[in-house]
Amino acid sequence: MGIARGPNLIKDNLVFGYDTGYGVADVFTTTRFYKGKPVDNMATDPTFLNSTAGTFSSQAWGGDTGNGEFATNTSPEGGGLMYINNNTSTAAGGGGNYNDLDVNNWTLTNGVTYTRSWWAKSNITQTINGHMLSVNGGGNNTYILGGTTDLVAGEWKRVSHTFTYTLGTSTNWRFRSINYNQSKVYIANIQLEVGSNASPFTATSRSGTASLIDLTRTRNIDISGAGFDSTGQIEFDGTNDSISCGTGILSGTGDFTVEAVFKYAGTGNAGTIFANYQTGNLQMFYSPRFIGLYLANSSTYLGSSPWSGTLPEFTNTDNVYMVTQREGTVTRVYLNGVLAKTGSSSSTIGTSSASFRIGSNTNQTEDFQGNIYVVKAHDRALTLAEIKQNYNAYKNRFNL
Image (tube, rainbow, N blue to C red; front, side):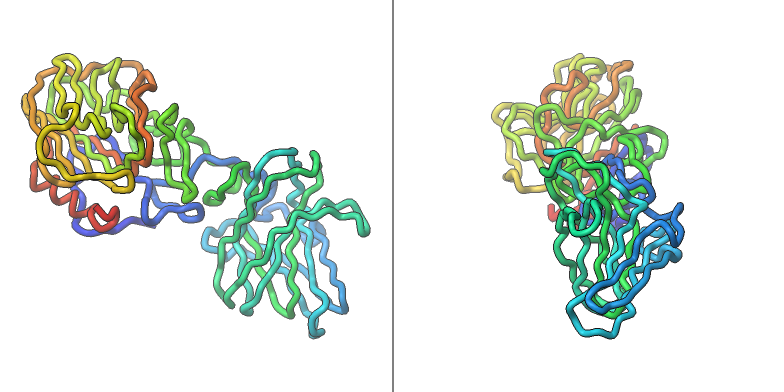
């Protein structure tokens, strides 16, 4: 899924960038450039590729009858097969058809929080149940109740259930689909992961370098050191969270522009947005006391403590579009498309074996607290008109 908002963004001379898909991407939805947080799916066969009619048990009770079958997966994420829980009974109430999907036997560890998610659809509007059970036989089964889910006829819905396991380590937990009505319920793309929030589906795992894709597709971005909020967006805790972007993004004494869209929730002196500071001497930062660009070799600050000049009043709930740049020896800081300060620097941005970072400097200090949704670096100075164009492209999406 793409992100289309307002005027076209200026992409000329882009050498690095990312966009977390804010406003589109969430715990179930991906974009071309943000696939969701790193995750290991504990399901051994989540799309039933190794499944046959004999790999599940289908049982009925209360006078109901039913069966199960596999078919090509037609869920929004697709891939492999889906399972169909088919209750063929005409009896009214009191029973149901349940299927234990034995292809997904899980070992759960005491005290660990898990989130289970799956796609579900029904051919009628109804409420369904999806539980986990430990199959001990007879009436001795133990259940982790997943609650009920309301389905609208013909519409796929991604369902999730979070629980903290407290029943002692067990190796035989399974997914149970319960269908009480004469109908078909479709189950697809089962995922079980550690943590208190769901994430977009993966059949196996998603690494820290396969989650957030560089807009130029020339660099690996590693987000394994970042945190995530309840919507699946990258979040920095102000202590030790950061993103590694690789080396050599910007260097030398030439022109450049760095753009960012973020929400700052901290109280520190210098929340680093983008930097190879301490090794290459470039730092873009934002905090209640310091805002701007630091080119250390000439000690050029754009900003002061407290900030001098007329600036918009931002709070910890505001999203901000910030630009720092150098053109010749002139350095500038823009906030929400407005020139806030100018300075000068001919300092060299040094090369280093240390990675550029988002959310902290290269020494992983002066940490940012909040969300950094977009960062882009150009190896030229964008014009004021281009900066305003990009601001307007982001304005509605981020409520700037």
